[in-house]
Image 1 (cartoon, rainbow, N blue to C red):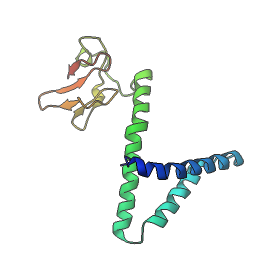
Image 2 (cartoon, one colour):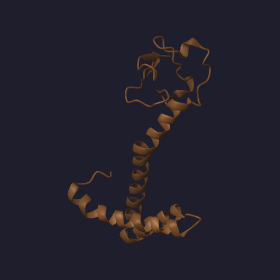
Image 3 (cartoon, helix red, strand yellow):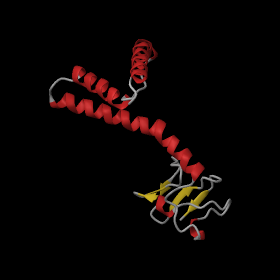
Image 4 (cartoon, rainbow, N blue to C red):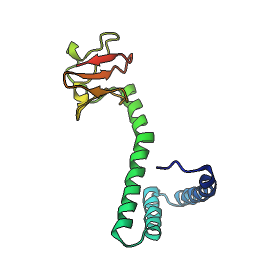
Length: 149
């Protein structure tokens, strides 16, 4: 969880800014732009220096990396993908001529393929989406009305 106190942020943010300036300098000197390799190197070195050689520490490091990746996906990547899905159209929509998957209010189609792992979702995943044993229910992304399938 990256949500640390303001006091800690005040200590860490200047270090991060220095690191960013270093990365930018490396980018301007390197026509192949090895940004990902440089980031991987820094993260690997930090892990090597911060976590000792025992299973619990390795497990802690992996857990932190996974949590970081998941939080980055949740806060940065997913909203970007959701916006693109909304702007460009869902790639998973099938059977759009079937009125069963059409919102009665606005006519927006809800993808039958969005029913994954017992949850009903449309292009944008919403906390309101849920599943019941009798029917699937989701929110239409066109008008946010409930759609039952």
